[in-house]
Length: 498
Picture (spheres, rainbow, N blue to C red):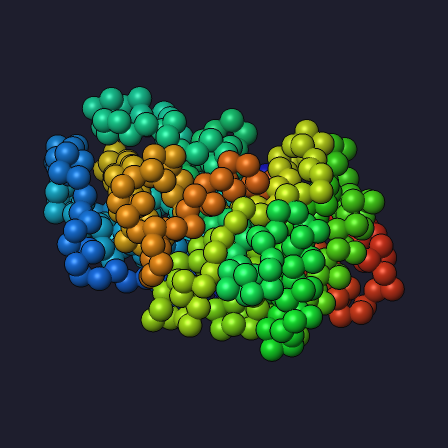
């Protein structure tokens, strides 16, 4: 199919889905054949109602560098009067830019920036229609990691844009972005599809007061995670469970948790021959472990996505979670929860063994710290690509990212230098918007990060085939874990052949 035809067809599919004229499964199947990733239906990371609003004093104290704003004024002057548009999911970086920081850019440059904060599926619809029409309604694209293949030819490679020396920000330093994130979320087929913008990732979060009371320490291994969870369940259950999960049948969150368990037991989704191997010895070991671990979870876990999981910890229903690190600043907010200051963090428990990337396929990278990042890119259809590039550099430079982290609720930075910025470290205390968890996030990205495979059919497999079958297994719909995994293998094989 020609690229122009693909764009039109994809836009048609998305429009029919949003209007209710097509079912979810049919959309996944057809869109997958066109290279649409697992985030297609808003099944990537959703933040929930955890938006942090800093105090007026904090906002007054934390302002952009005067030198950076002078560059913005000089570089942006030729484009004064231009209006740029960005459609984005409700992420901590986007919220901080939209509500607190873009005014500085607009005042310095004379460029107006309109940021539409939307559910992820609506962001995708806007982008696909924009690509299909080539109208350039949106100048900047927010790209979920699972969309990289779909939009890689529709955006500028930032390394090429930096060659325009008259528009290059001094010391922008593209090499400052964490290498694991560049490789894991920004690269596709040799192209850099934007720069790393946001990085939710699995870390260990646990109630230190409960752990201390029972003489436990942060789990260093998967075995310790299970034994700690059981000890808490035995001592305090059912009022407080040992660990919370994200195990809603048919939901992408269930697949996310499964990958962490699978990778943590030496397994992988695919082997180098591109065959599903979640049903091999390591995969079945992971299922046995997970099935036992579920006994230490609250009764309602089968109905929870990541939001229910986070609320279980926030409300004291569970004492720990292996999940998205950006929940931690919410837990530390005394105006939102009753557990402020009671939680601590650790890197994910070590895998029993870990397969290397060359032992998998489709770019799958095993690691207990499952990641779900995104990039920011300039659209090739923009009517003002140079103005958009000026804004994009400002929005993702080290100074702005430090402000986003300090003002945006402690979100994980994508640049190395930001983790060491004094403004970021100053928030490493108990309270709303804390950054005291960020050293663990940084270490997890560097040493424990896991990335899902990148293939067109992954949308259907990860958001339908695997979580539906896993939900059926935990509901007693299979005779054994092997039967469930063998069934998934058969389904995946059929999808890949189709």
